[in-house]
Image 1 (cartoon, helix red, strand yellow):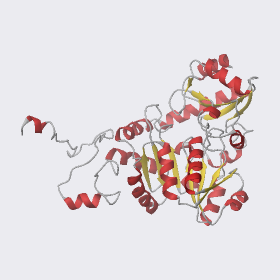
Image 2 (cartoon, rainbow, N blue to C red; image 1 turned 90 degrees about the vertical axis):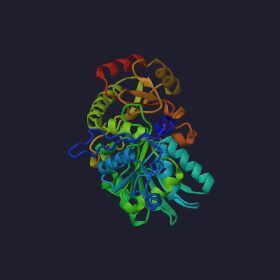
Image 3 (tube, rainbow, N blue to C red; image 1 turned 120 degrees about the vertical axis):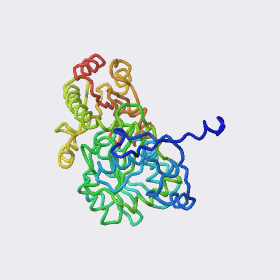
Length: 388
């Protein structure tokens, strides 16, 4: 071959030697795959379990992430996406049609709330919000057109825990799919499919990746057939995960058990400190006995997570002043990395909500959301103390 041709046609090595395998998942940073047989290429473009063909459809590194998270969640299969919101929008746009109806818990991530509002305006999809603690409230909310019950294991930011074991059977009996965002709990603290959920969502950007260096999402399915249907929609939707992002997530997940244990241990210390501080009006960590969801969470979760909120006694002005005085802790919009971060939900993650909607979601203007990292707790308390 001429040099101009040789630099284009690099042969990729395949680790096929007997008795040898890579210790880490290889990164397949390729957009597509070449074929010798046109029939195999054509077949592979029609199903998720064919040969790898195009990374918008399937990719070996992405597949490794999907299979790992599906196994952790005790699901049949998973789809990886470019972000958590990519997974949420993929599901809601794929499951719903014009005129359908959704029942959702009131305490939701602001991006999810905004998507439901947009679906309502664009396609006439009705949305009814419920507390998530009352089975009869759910029964009353379900209509003949209800298609989805949408919950969060540990809600963003108030730590609300819906009674999934009580609600999922009611939804299933009515032919309604239960979708649960499990981002804050991770599969280590809760596995919604085991409690009756049909689909589980993750923002892999948070605790799964765990190092503030990746953006990604996942949708895990309890049913293989529903996964295959959604795969076809995902191919057209175009929210596929990047192979490098999937590789980073897989690398981060190897320390997930160690990190989550430290996150939660630190959260307990920080929550106790804030709970005793005179400048703090209320602390809403699910691990505190006076949290409204403490009893529910204790029943079917194995932990309370490390992201929660607290209300400053001075309201909005105090929240702004506090946010400017932190030093070690970062003011940042995402979470789940090794470092502690905080933000003001009313003006950031839940900025789409008006005053009444914020009140209904339990979000005050003096509320701060904190995601506790893995630093030494004494250093975190020192920074919080001086800022307060």
